[in-house]
Image 1 (tube, rainbow, N blue to C red):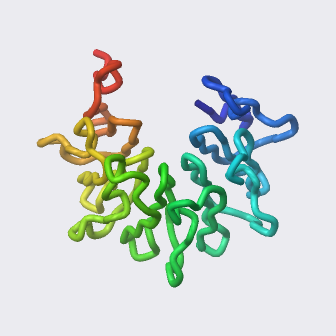
Image 2 (cartoon, rainbow, N blue to C red):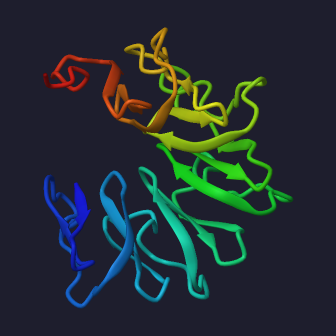
Image 3 (cartoon, helix red, strand yellow):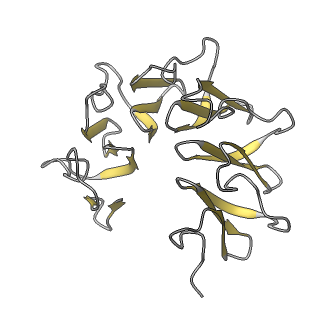
Length: 225
């Protein structure tokens, strides 16, 4: 886990297999931070990106000439950024074409990376995903955007499922469904924010309460009373 503190510095904690919680000395102030599987990336005060942790597949090697960015997302073994001109650039693992940005994609508003897929909200508020099936039993529909999804406000991606908040503030999820993590509860209603975990999903509802669904084998979907 990583947090931006009140003084705009970053502090990380938790598993540190590949140095993903070792914030670089001299990183300075940051605007945004994204945690991947074994690597971490931050947008610095000057709008450049710096990454640390595992770099076995190039996911922490920021491309030369990337320049200023608006947002960054860290997937399992790849990283994507929205550049100043609203185009997307990705780096790191590309075994399933998760880094191969489609030609003609155009400008985007948001980008999220998963285990072997990448999804964006385009300038017209539609969603486009790319990548490939990691294994048929893991995520055989992560890149298949629901045909009736329509316009969306925000996206959240875990390793193997994606959820979107539509313009009417309702939620739609797709991808792997081992534990019911894409089964949006009946009566959920309007939501303000959504976040996907490994096999669970949580949303902040219109009344600022939290509701979670999916796997609860460790209590991760049981909201504290």
